[in-house]
Length: 109
Image 1: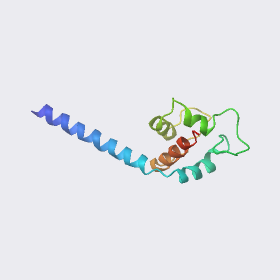
Image 2 (image 1 turned 180 degrees about the vertical axis):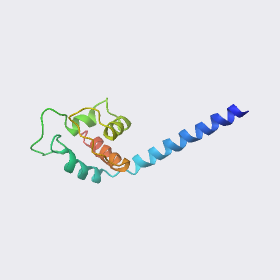
Image 3 (image 1 turned 90 degrees about the vertical axis):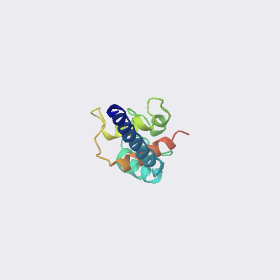
Image 4 (image 1 turned 90 degrees about the horizontal axis):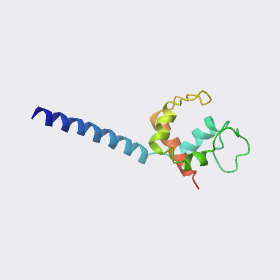
């Protein structure tokens, strides 16, 4: 009986975390994501149509948005802790990351 209670408690925690993540991503503000991208990302990445200058050694936001490798969760995890030396750790909040991911995913066109 004790084992069943533990499983239900664990399931409850998982459901709560998934609900929190889903509500965060649903509330993501892609307009704020664009502001973040223009401020912090545009020096290296093409972050918007019409941008004239960026590094050709890094993918554009449209390429990242189309990539099967980067779904929303993977992209959010990467932005929270970038693991290659060329990408600085911007120390974004979870809300800012959600906004930036929403903006990147809108660039798929």
